[in-house]
Length: 173
Image (tube, rainbow, N blue to C red; front, side, top):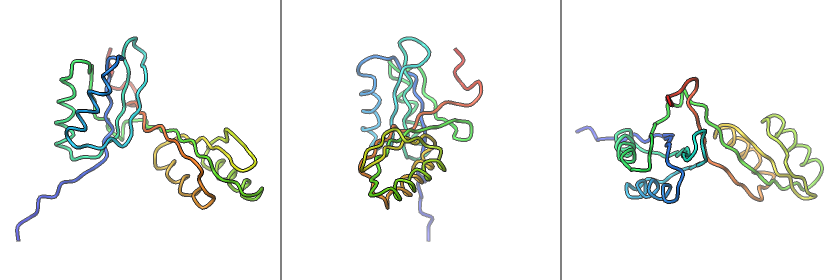
C-alpha cells in the first residue's frame, strides 16, 4: 500500500505590525477567509510607535500554507511586518472574565479557593454570582473554566492571545 499524504495541522501565533487606520483588519481577515482559515483568536491594539498597531492572530494550519499566507499578507501595503512567533521564545497571555453561579456560601467559598489557586481575581460579587478575572496562557484559562463548569458558568468573555517575543525580540527599530 502507498503512503498517504498526511497534512499536520498545528496552532500558529502570527504577529503583525500594521498601520493603525481603518480597513487594515478587514484586509488581513479577508486574506485568511479567502484561504479558508478560521481565526481562533485575534487581538489588536496600538504599540509604542505612533500610527502603528500590533495584531496577534492565533490560527491552525499546516506549515507550508501558513508560510505562504504570511508572505502574501506581508505584501499588503498597510502591513509593516509579519512574524510567525516561536512559542518557546514568546510570552503569551490571554484574559478571561467568567461569571459563575453561586448557589450558596459553600459554593462561593469553593470558587474563591479555586480563584486563589489559579492566581485569578474576583472583580465583581453579587448575591447569585461572582465574576472572576483570569490571566495567563490559554491552557491555564481552559483548566479554570473546566473546573468552574460544574458550578454553572453564566457568561464568559475571552480576549484572545496577545504575545511578545522574549528579550530583545525581532523589533529592531
